[in-house]
Image (cartoon, rainbow, N blue to C red; front, side):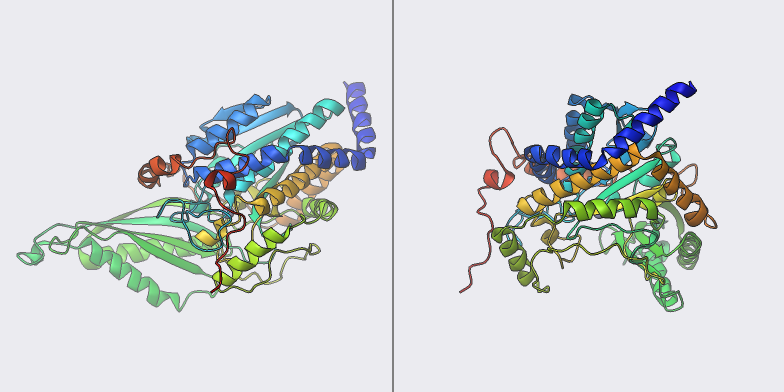
Length: 520
Ligand SMILES: [Zn+2]
């Protein structure tokens, strides 16, 4: 046994010496796969599926992986569109993760520098999650090839971020033990730059709970017998008013916002049912938990004032991400080795025209890579990502690959403009190289895996210990977006990308690249 282990160790040491050559091979192999990468970007863009409804996307991606010898387990963690794909065996186990869901009302023709939806009012990839699987699957297929050819031991796993826009699944993945045997997690997310970070990064990340409050009153004729009724909508409004007054006395780091998801049916019926949906964001577990408790108290108080009752449902949660320094330093070297994609004049023309169109700073696409920055000392908070829960359970980094245009508002049609164009295709190819190279670094240097875990144990989790927001009874909100998707899927289907007939999605849609406003 020891002799075998030594032999295996010896083989790894030899392979480690060949790392620079193997990385060159990675880059060459990823380049050879550019057509498949482009097809994945375009195909998933055309599916435009909202969180928990990513059926076409998951079927398509797992199909590619199975065809290439990956073992796929579907419906994991109680989520129908979630899955885990595995190749190889033994240690280390390296998992790739990336999101697959899109944004409501963000339908947009790619390559067009002004608002022009493919299907009016439909969901669309107004964040760019359509490119993530192109990055991770390309990287995984190339790694598989190298592992076979050079007898590299270890296991690759791929996992989709289902319903990331709802912060809806990753805490459930953790609860289901999906990362128990995983040594390193390499996440990938679309950006307009090529970067990685560690610790709390630039500090613009919050954690959150996403909670829906359902108030129950009593219906009555609103003119004939209002005294008989108890308005659930009154309770929603009082809760919101209460929260807005209290907001002044909360820490500046908090962010909270809500939408009323049910405001009643018509004015002459006292609303017996009403509901409001809150995101409560803060910088750490304790403060998020405090906001959650405060929200529950406000809801109960509003119910008391109005003679209604209330119950609530946790529909999403996320710890603020904390990323691993050892992996980030390793990844940064690969980012610098790969370098920014070469943007064409057409790419820059599209980028500048869009920036002008929306009134953003007109700078075009980024061409330089910044050095790895130290985490900021005082995080300010901002958006959230449910990878946070994974990052507190396994050493993890989040690669930002350059597949979108800078200075965009986020979560809107504008963020979809570049996402099935050469900008997204080239950015995804660059991202795939870094994902595969970084995985290779950890496959061939067991001491690096050890160092990543040392940082995880001795620095990151020395004083802070993961506690899930989920209770044992919380279930993933898998019914969300169902109606919206059923409404739009038949229309979107007509525009699904057919790579058998068209080289690119732009070609299929008959879009001249780039299409910009002709100035009078
Ligand atoms: Zn995202």
